[in-house]
Length: 412
Image 1: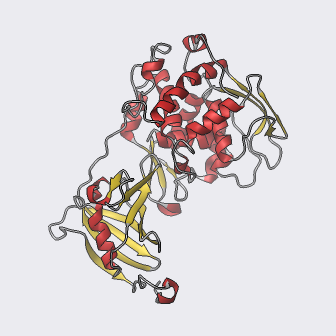
Image 2: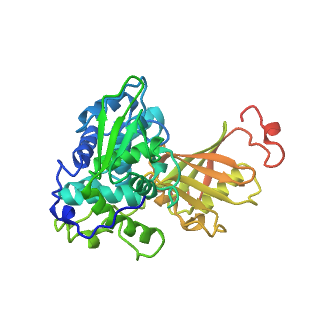
Image 3: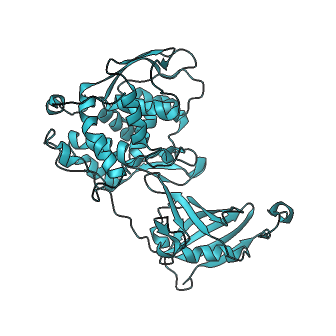
């Protein structure tokens, strides 16, 4: 089913945006910010998800708590919290530090938070809507990569068009006429409800359930808004739009209906951090500690890693890590034309890594030698370290060719 053709947009013109509507997204996002607070919260795992032990606490702070009846619910068991987390990362209000149970933490970026606080309710609403449909990625929660065939905008459009104008009835928590199964679909459905684009009727979940849905109705406001928004997304995806700002891309099309929309969320430019970067580069139990000046490019670091493990360097390689917003960042060998960033043009000082965070370095895509490159600390600049330099070694590296399993010593 396709979206209806609308000749007027009275619901847009008459809609007042505040923490009471449309939807509960402004109220609930503020609850998430207060939950994280000035000191941040402990994060879990590779993707810095919210602490499992406090998910019920956060759920109670939302306007419509879910009250799942699960023994050990994870973040994805709370679709609304999962969606709010995606918005938090996509706006770069929430940024991770450290890694794992011991050092992982999620904090609020002071500069972005100050900009957020200066926005009015309408500006915040559309900043979050663009965060969802233009910037957020399943990669931030360990899901699939971005791109029109797998991103959040396509998932949202498919679900919106799949719900009939007469509404969708759920039988045994399953929709009758459209596909809405899995973590990503239910997270998307929760975001529709948060933004007031769908009306979702629910009842208390039974044991072993999280979100017991009885019926979903599209809202007139949502239909009018998305009828304008999705063509803009398609123009951007397919390259038919000029270079657009990070936030405020839809302001020219929507300001007629929302004159309060004057300002936009502004993200800080990447900062260069000077100093001497100390990386622990591990391949199994074999590791090398490498010191690198901030102005050194990543190709020099790559060559130092390859040489430190006695590999011949005759293969492609790349570094992989996460951006501040949780999306994947690949910095590849200069010969890889399809990648946006290349190792010979990316300086170490611009890496979006906090201390104790890691990136992966893959050498030889066929053999797939994958190194863990952990940033241990950033020292002041040193006259003694003027290029990438191995400062400590542990263990005998494996042979590059042949069966690696037969060549590992006791330290591998």
